[in-house]
Length: 158
Image (cartoon, rainbow, N blue to C red; front, side):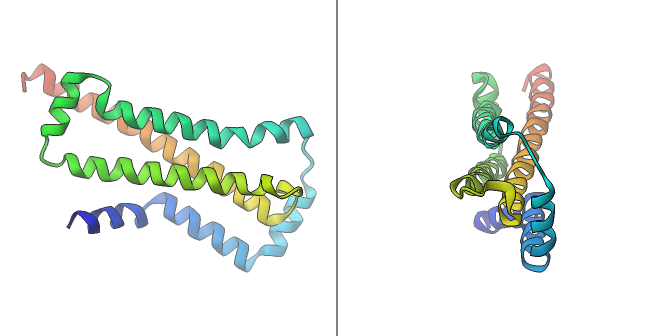
């Protein structure tokens, strides 16, 4: 049951939809992606900094994911005693898995000298950056929701 839930969390998500959309774009509209990539001209210094954005987001995601559960000891005790804590862990692990994957995908174009000046490189970079942004927003939102729940539970004396 838990493995099926984790698989559902992975594949029924905005991140998975983004991966499918990027794959479709690369398969069905490669020439369109190439023409867009060729028309973009970006300063070399900006290009060097662009590849650090997904990596920086990944570091932030990993840090915040740990804080979700372990920021306060009293909250960590409440969460780990919660019967559905395993579901929260599934979502956190899925987020970390996506964050790692999107980081790798966004760095792939920089291994090729052409970078994002070709369609494949541009789509891969945008997939990584977009996916990383979605994961970061999800973690950020989860932090708000968890704090709201935990503060309410603390006030109720639970």
